[in-house]
Length: 215
Figure (cartoon, one colour):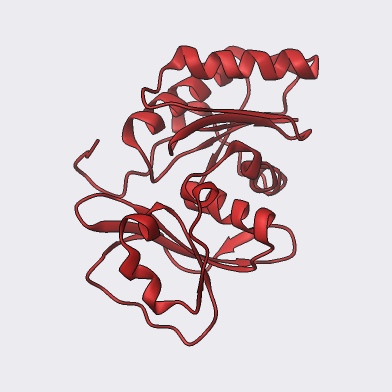
């Protein structure tokens, strides 16, 4: 069983690979808040942390404070429970959620990165999970990606910068598509675990994509 932690977006959320999950909107990420969600989830499942196979945590890109808190919590628990950790791309989690809600098999994610830039990445459904089709990168909103193929656009970047959608034939822009949720980490975490990608907790690092931090 894998415990998933997502703190890169507007919500902090946790999930277990048995399908249970909790989420809460928060503007001030605190370790105590995440730990409370985890405690409730494990008690409901009737297990302790020692019974887990691994932990999974979103490593970005996303909100810097949230990423730092989420990774610190995952590392602390993994050390205490003697478990390894899976690092999960936040944009992949968001794309997985779009597939779950809409069945969209071709998704382009644009997450607001401030400074009139977005984090962007494209994904295709492979029958089990959404798989990245390009390197995760930062794109200026002044750039334009015109594509004759039909893609579904998702992420806070499309809400903050509506002009980004002009290059896509189809674009869902709704509240659930603005932020990743831990329940959508489950399939990604299971696949990563099966592929033996779990690593020691000390090796988990946030993927800010920028050298300088912007809150």
